[in-house]
Amino acid sequence: MQPSKHNILSQVAGSDSWLLVNLLSGQADLLDPLTATRFLRGEYAPELAAKGYLVDPAEEATRYAAAKAKFAADQKDDEVQLFFVPSYACNFGCSYCFQDEYAPQQTHDPDAVIDAFFSYVDDTFAGRKKYVTLFGGEPLLDTPKNRKVVQKLLDGTKARGLDLAIVTNGYSLASYVPLLQTGRLREVQVTLDGSRAMHDKRRSLKGGGKTFDPVVAGIDAALDAGLTVNLRAVLDKENLADFGNLAHFAIEKGWTERPNFKTQVGRNYELHHCQTNNTRLYTRLSLWEDMYQLIERDPEILRFYRPAYSISRFLFDEGRLPDPLFDSCPATKTEWAFDATGAIYPCTANVGKAGEELGTFYPARSLQQAVVDDWSGRDVTSIAACSSCSQQLACGGGCGAVSKSWKGTIRGSDCRPVKELLGLGTALYGQREL
Amino acid sequence: MKSLIKKPVSSTCCAPAQEAVAQCCAKVSKNVAGCHD
Image 1 (cartoon, rainbow over the protein chains, first blue to last red):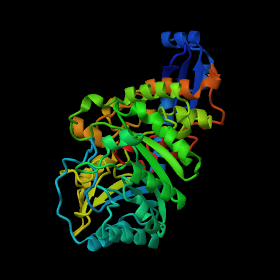
Image 2 (image 1 turned 180 degrees about the horizontal axis):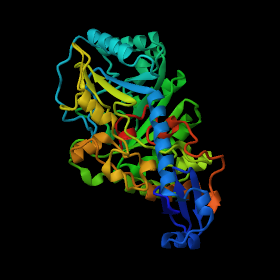
Image 3 (image 1 turned 45 degrees about the vertical axis):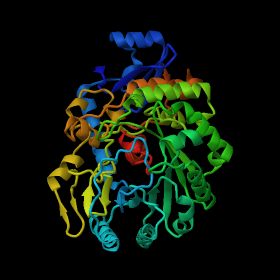
Image 4 (image 1 turned 180 degrees about the vertical axis):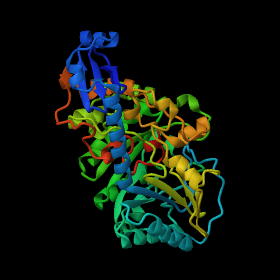
């Protein structure tokens, strides 16, 4: 017997206790300092074998293969998210836009493109669970042309029994709510980057102009109409300290008590190109370290947003571990993106980026199958750096688009600081156990 | 050692794959900063 390749041992932040997790065996234990020290020295308590922390390597390899096969089978049956971008035009001039270098693109007649999109979906994704997400640019610009596009997508999805989700800056959301109520709307994602002054500084109209109040009015109108709102904040060192103010604003508005309100956080980071003001950017770890400190000072934030800290929140909420994550990149597996030029892309991270096209759905259909295969074959078993990593089944190999942008290959690792995040998350959510 | 597992554990997996993916991606959060980071 020898230690499993999938043991993750993390010291709990601010404590002398340690967390031992194994995604393959599904076990998680708190270790006292003496047991942890012995474990690190290679002295193992007998019960570690019974829990799959000590294994016969051949037996573990069999379990790994079985878990991988189950993951692949489940992924094939998973719901596919189909993004549609009617235009990259946007009325916002956000200080961190990742699409700001996208060249304006020639588009076709919107009616013909949308008809072709639905026809492609009907043919290519027949028999798969799926839904459509309207993405941009800004898809809810307040123009007659945009309203017609949104109407056609609402009608097209509804006629097929599909949900439609929308990712919007929220500026014109209030005026769109009556129209959105006519469709099968799954949710609307809207972004607020903090309280009024901070948000307006970071997410102004192009050429200047405040946006906080119209976005808030849009959220109110959507919630009142029964639509689900997924509120997102994009964080960096400029606005993290203001995140608590946003949380308290949402709590005071009563949003957090609504069943149709949820939240998420996005880290401001460099996806395709360097940002001019990149000293404000957090690393994957430092954002969550600072978030931890912020929540310690202001625990009310948890009423608004509960960070995942890798698998920590899941573990303490559910009393079990999630499935091993062999692949965290959905591109060409459970995600595809389509735009108004008639092009097909792997995912939202690269939709519209020149050179990332996989093929076309309009005016003619084409697909570079070899490139699709490169994306769809990406998982922790096909990324060399993941093979010896004990954290692979919590990380999933990260993002293929990030790997391609910064390492030049889809099959490169894009690592998550799982061990450190587990230390923070156990301190935050596991207090009763410590 | 103190177990943190309160529910039965199967030999390989115990939750739908959907939940595993959901660790990284809330469904509509599958836009840039939600999922890919």
